[in-house]
Amino acid sequence: MAPKILSQRTLIEMQAFSEYIAIVVRNAMEDFHCQHLSDAQMKELNPIIRNAIYTALYAHKASEKSEMSKHFVEYHLLSIPTYWEEPELLKGFKESEEKLSGQPPIPEK
Image (cartoon, rainbow, N blue to C red):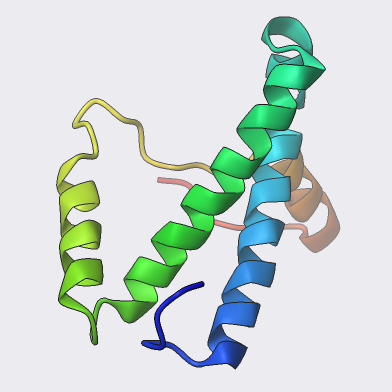
């Protein structure tokens, strides 16, 4: 159980948001899963992803009140490799958004 740094309502909302993010990640990994991971491996990987997302969201939100959370966030921000590409919208989402709205969801660089 998480410490009482955040309200129960905030924790429940973060858990739900973590599940939402995790299912987007999981669905984005579907082709990779089919090509490289067994269902058993994916079953083991899914809670790792969900729990890491929830932990990251919790620590980010709690970092104003908790030194531990603040250090956790700072450590992980410093751990981001310089060679990582900037995040991009998933291709299918971006294409659907452009088709439905008639404009790109994010202006082209």
